[in-house]
Length: 319
Ligand SMILES: [Zn+2]
Image 1 (spheres, rainbow, N blue to C red):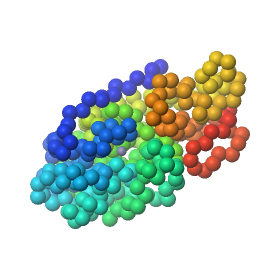
Image 2 (image 1 turned 90 degrees about the vertical axis):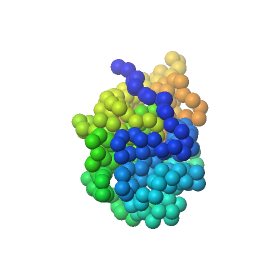
Image 3 (image 1 turned 90 degrees about the horizontal axis):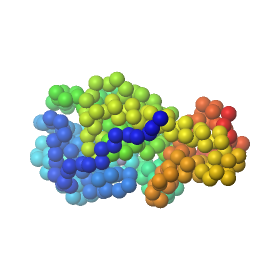
């Protein structure tokens, strides 16, 4: 089995310039590129007479000005949040102040469990805990405007409050997929913010849906989304099998170490042999998410107690 995913890493755009993605939807890319944000966070403007904004993006005066310029005097009624990570929501207050729009999102239902200051999408550095939506959105809720409507899909996994939005009212069937499904990379699933079982269920939720284009939180649009969703599911199954095999053999990647106990930290170089150093923490937490999913199903156990939050690295045994 292979874990090759047909990633699309080229993206035609210019910061500050709105580009039409499907009829009635325009995209602006914020200038906050990075290892987790690719070229930057995407902000979408939906509608023709009055607008819905999806993800205001980071707190950035130039990005705010670009959103207002793209709106071109049309009222922004609602600002919808896909999930409460800073790169998506930190610009909300300024955009609300400029437009009077209402905010809408799932909202955080549990206090932030600090992942420390590690540069991963799990710690306090990434999560914006103070978001309290004016309109609380749950799975299946509709946000209606004059010429369009969005239907929310609760898709936890990358973040517990993550929502995707299906667009109604335009000829092209599109899904705003946030950081759940993207073309340029896999979604980061890192505990305690991320949860592997929830992420896989949220991928299964998309199988068989009719949308032909996904508009993600980072990177270009996905033109063949069902193929990508299936590829992501296969990729995670493949990785889980590799991790389970490493635990079964007591393997730490060196031939002399077979039979010794395995830990999450020892598994990382086995399943990520060509890892960039700056992604080590994210990769370690991704392995932890898989191990926790295996433990939830009784396939792996650890003799030592596991802390309720944060990274851990106990000796693992396969059932
Ligand atoms: Zn993001």
